[in-house]
Amino acid sequence: MRNKYSVFSLIKNALSYHENWQRAWKDPAPKKEYDAVIVGGGGHGLATAYYLAKKHNMNNIAVVEKGWIGGGNTGRNTTIIRSNYLWDASAGLYDHALKIWEGLSQELNYNVMFSQRGVMNLAHNLQDVRDLKRRTHANRLNGIDAVYLSTEEVKKFCPIINTSPDIRYPVLGGTLQRRAGTARHDAVAWGYARGADAMGVDIIQNCEVKGIKRNGDSVEGIETTKGFIKTKKVGVVAAGHSSVIANMAGLRLPLESKPLQALVSEPVKPIIDTVVMSNAVHAYVSQSDKGELVIGAGTDDYVSYTQKGSHQIVEGTLNAILELYPIFSRMRMLRQWGGIVDICPDASPILSKTSIKGLYFNCGWGTGGFKATPGSGDLFAHTIANDEPHKLNAAFNLNRFVSGDLVDEHGAAAVAH
Amino acid sequence: MFLINCPYCGERDQQEFKAGGEAHIERPKQPTELSDDEWAEYLFMRKNIKGVQFERWNHAHGCRKWFNMVRDTSSDEIKAIYKMGEKPPSQ
Image 1: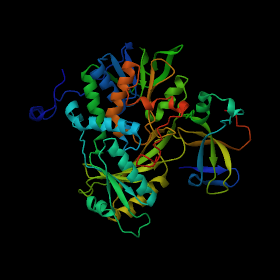
Image 2: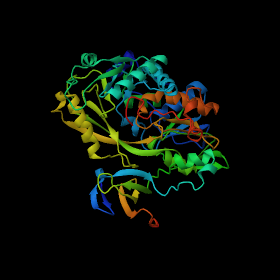
Image 3: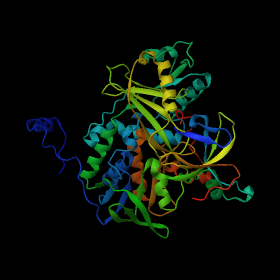
Image 4: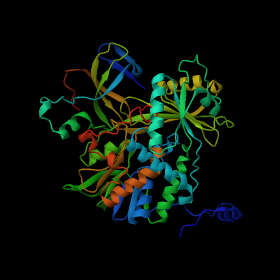
């Protein structure tokens, strides 16, 4: 039985010098057979397992992870959560996730530190202004909170932004989604892992998938570094490595994997109490609870699995940051890193069945998957359990690249991809 | 970030180049006879290999010529560079 975290458990454990906390999840060896196996123990994969167990009563399942849970893109993103997407299908998908975020800490009994501090997107030219106004209207028609701000209102909401008209990319306005914000990325993975484990899900770390065994057009199991695991349903949630897994099953996906970089500064006192994103100059910034500025840069334009990325990308982002926030000119950057993001031609994700029975893919989240973690897990669990997509992820099928019914969020989703 | 030996200009910073994606994807000879599946395969599906991959690059801020490259995407090590129309080196 899992102990509940509460103020009483905190006091009780304080009395024993915090030396007797229960493990948050077990470390089991894989069984011979499961009803379903999730490949990839990041936020999306763990959330999928959690909802499979919770909503679909599939408890004999496992999550296999080649490294440690949350060690991939879950721990490498800039933790921004928002749902102000242009198209109806995307709005439905991302707002579904945002609604789950709003009650997630209570549901998981784990503080994911979800903070609805608002996300502001800036306009720097007349086309940006038109695009952002259009998106604001589209959001409101879809029931998503969005307001358009004038330059003065932008300045009032975030006083440290340089709104002088004579900078290279002047701020002409912006949009604000107040329900948007940030969360603690590691806690999301840990909270879902703990919740899934409590319902009997086996979380198997250091277990890399080496092959997918097929019997004709159906899945029979997976070959891993810890041996063969028999299962009829495999849900792949492997982000940048989705194509690698797909190639094992003889599938090709419409993905390209590229390095995306982020960096954090030394910690300072609270200076920016919201998230500000700029599409045109590709710079976004927020401040973590530790006080670090969390800065997101862009992707390199070539396929690479190196988790590094080019220096000039970071330099370009910091140039933009410095022009928008002159106050940061003497900040020192502490750490920089890269994650491998899997980008679809239409910059929308894939949550879909495949031509192989029992093989499902949840991928293509590109540069913005973190925000969707709870919704992605919920809808992918539905897809795996019922062998049919939920109506909210029906548009995000693989077949859209054949039918041409793309969800073209490229550049329309408030951030350049 | 790495150096690329342009077959026309010599060694230059990668920043001068534009990646053009997977190489040797042949344009369909009879486009009108293609099924939707075949179009999807041609337009969208990619190998996206972790390891040695054949790709096209363009010296966008230099001679602006296209060429082919064999590169290990797990280390960014360039294995070979050859001109358009030349046979790819056997791996």
